[in-house]
Structure formats: C-alpha cells, structure tokens
Length: 138
Image (cartoon, rainbow, N blue to C red; front, side, top):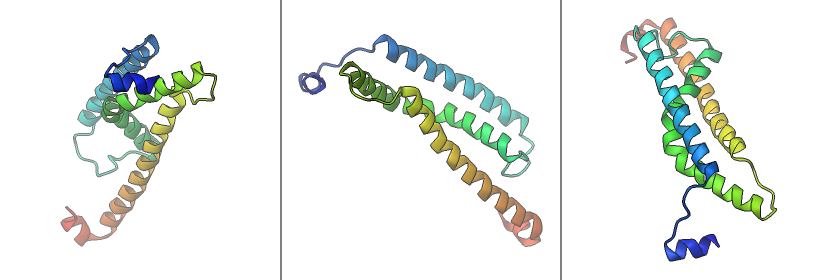
C-alpha cells in the first residue's frame, strides 16, 4: 500500500500521532536550545574543554545540547520510524515503539559524549602536567 502511494506521488498527511511526536520534538529542541544558551553564557569564562564540569554534569549538558541540535534534523527519520511502526502495529506485526527508538538514538549520542569527556579530560590533564603543551596546545 505504501509503495502504491509512493508510485502515484501521493503522500499521506500527518496523523494525530505524528503531529504529537513532531510537537514533542520541536518543544524538546526549543527547551534544550534555551538551556544550552544559558549554559554557554554561564561558562563564558573558559574553564577548559570540560568546562570544569564533573562527568555526570558534562553528560547531562551534552545530552541537552544533542537534543537541541539533533532533534530538528532527526525529526524526519523519527517520523518515518513512527509511520512504519504504526503500519506494523495495524497489521498485527511486532514493532518497536517510537519512544524506544528515540531513547536508543539519545543513548548513542550519550555514549559519544562519554567518549568526548574521557578524551577531553585526558587532554586537559596532559596540558596541566606539561608546560610546553599548555603553552602551545592551541
């Protein structure tokens, strides 16, 4: 049925569920941008590449920043996933709920944030212990 719609050039308009998902993505991104801007203004003093934050706080800030930047560009993918899951559910097939897909997406970004923090901490530690690197690191 979807192939027939695509071949004829017709696109099914958003249903209520897709509108709700899109509204939640947009609201989350706007809220995350507000927090990100406030955080960047609070840390404008330049406290190093980890911003002087502990690992857990850095990860929280990282995830908020990822929501701000990635949800707008990921929205089409998330909406398509939701549409496919709806079709599977309507046919009685097994499906993964959209919230699980979004949570997994954020977990992948969280893992990259953990890696970024570990690398940044190592670089910051090396710069603190090596005057040449501290002076010429930039």
